[in-house]
Structures are given as C-alpha cells and as structure tokens.
Image (cartoon, rainbow, N blue to C red; front, side, top):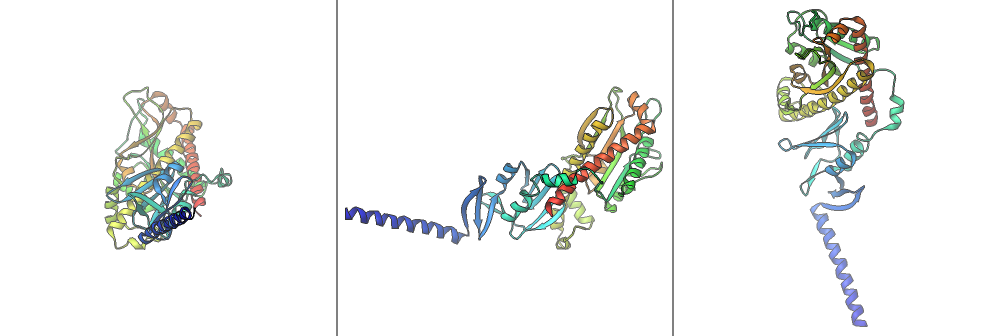
Length: 372
C-alpha cells in the first residue's frame, strides 16, 4: 500500500510540474489560450485579451471582406462599417478614426482583435441600440449639408418623352423643390446647377467634393425603348469600381481632412489606405440610403419601385461622400410622362426623397449615439 501511495504522489507531482512547464512555455512565447467567451475563441497575447475576428463576425451577423494585399479587413452590417489593418492600432469606424490601446494581430493564421475592439465596435456598433431608437425615431432631419445634382441641362436635354417632356426640365424642378424642402428644415443645400445650363460631369464631382456635404443626390428621369416600363429606382456606385484605385488617385490629389488625421500627412501609402476605407464606408452608406429612399417611396407614390441597383456612373465614381443617383420615373412611359409634367407629382417626389433622407439620417444618428 505504501508503494502504491508513493507512486500516486509522484505521479501527481509530475503532472503538476508538466502543467507548470506548459504554462511557462505559453507565457514566455507571449500567448496563451484562455476560456472562450460566448463560444468565441479567446487568447492572451502579451497580457492583452484578444478575440477571433471571424467568430465575432459570425456571432453578430457582420460581413467581412479581407484585402490580402493591403492586409485590411472591411466589416459591414446594414449602414454600419469598420475597417482595420493588421499591425495597426488605428481603425476607421463609420468614417471616424478610433485609436486602440493594442494593435490588430494575427494568431495561428487568423485575425484577432483586442478586447477594446470587441467592446467598442461589436458590442456597441453592431448591436441594435433599441433604447436609443425610441429617442431618435421621428422628428428633425439630421443632416447638415446636401449636394443636389440635377442631371443634364443646357444643350444636353437628356431623355425626351413622346409628348416632348424633357428630362433636364423635370430633374431641375425636382432638385429645386427638394432643396427648398431641405432648407426649410435647416439643412444647407448646394445645387450643381440652378438653371438650364450645361455642367460637365467632372465639374459636378468637383462641386460635391469641395462642398464638405454629408450626401450627394443626383436627380434623373429614365427612358427605355419599351414604353411599358415604368417606376422608381436608385443607383449606388458598383462594387466593380475599385476602391483601392480611387483611393490611390485621391491620396495623390486631395488632402485628408479627417479629424486626428495628421499622422497621414507625410505618408502617401497610409493616406491611400485611409481613403480606401472611406470609399468602402461610403458605398455601404449609399446602399443604406438607397434602401431608405425606396422604402419611403413605396408608400409615398403610386408607382412601381424597381429597387436598388449598382452602376459605374461617373458622378458616383467620383464623389467621396455617400451618394446615389435617383431615377424618378420614365418619360418614355406615357402615364409617367403625364405625371412628371405636373407640379403636384414632382412635389410628391421631392417630399418622398426628403423623407427617405430623414429616415437615413436618423439611422446614422443611432450609430453615432451608440459610439459616444
């Protein structure tokens, strides 16, 4: 019995020593796995708690895209987005720069993020703040400045209906009505054209980019060989438009006016990375704006809602802020040409766009409130 007891005691001591050695190896290497939280793999790297980014995305229903060349991950959910780069402590959250106390890292081939990122981005940004929703639903539109672009003009009439209705006239009238409605609610507006004159696409883009506006709205009227086709639709810049190429061009030709962005003043590569994040975020917000416009219009006008589409339109590729191109109806359709000729219907369209902007701006306000 004594021999057996000694063997058991020695075995226990060896086991204790074995586990101590294993712990020391992990501590010396700077990384150890710690108990998972909410079934998310969790690690300790140099004393900082890290979480698996892929697992966090799965848990919160967040879409992640990773650019291997830039070593940058782009996260998005609804109108909310975040961009982060391996080895950096700087992240971009809905176009706002946030500094982390620890860098984004990689462990066993997977991207991991520090506890601060989980708590301030996933637990707040990507979680629906229901209590805040009640406070912000309804009420004042939450925008400071909007650029309104009336398509075509001057010697470019745009589409022309069977009974002679010119697209350029419809676009300008709705743009002016929308501008008036926004101004009545305290929102500054900039019209790329306020009369029947021709404005090059490049000039329209420059006006938008110099304005410091929150949004860019381009008003157009549609046409199709099939005169039976009718309805309202909204376009955002196509995913096939390379954000990295746009970012590289912008980094060389424009200043970076983000708050706390002095760090990028002498680094072209870093500027390009930040602009890439901005363009990706702008597309996500443009999609959300498109949804808001279509949803409101579905109950505001008696017309088909053709939905949200993407395109490589020059004005959408060039603007740096969230921007959409709205096709208010088809002048090639006899019924819609008749409606678009009337001031009452144009006013209804302008009011619908206003309400879509209001809905979008309140959603953005929820995100900002959650980040405070």
